[in-house]
Image (cartoon, rainbow, N blue to C red):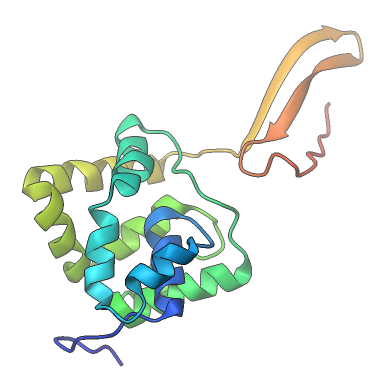
Length: 178
């Protein structure tokens, strides 16, 4: 049940949800828990969407059309975000494809909710909000591969170069070359 018009206290779970949803960060700092836990949920949400981190990490990336910075989300992270969007913003599960690991798609679905739009308008005005949401929609329509590959040399059947996973630099990349 969604508590429209009721003042909800922000729990530790809510803070984790907000950091995943708004900034793509899995574990907020301890000081952030202390800052937001026990306060109003939408006060915490408004504070995060108005923060320098949100502007620098999310809005600027969307406007430049580069993938949003995001940590790798676990299945539990996706469930936390999906449940939080449903609980606080009335976003149905079907509006969020939790299998794509795309922060921009999740963010767009949640920020399209009327309550989220109100917070964005308060911080960035109508034009700024529309510009950001349009940039986020364009960014989401692009196919961003997390794999980067550079080939230095091809000599017969020998290929020399490198490839890496931009999202998780420690993760092995397996390639078939044909």
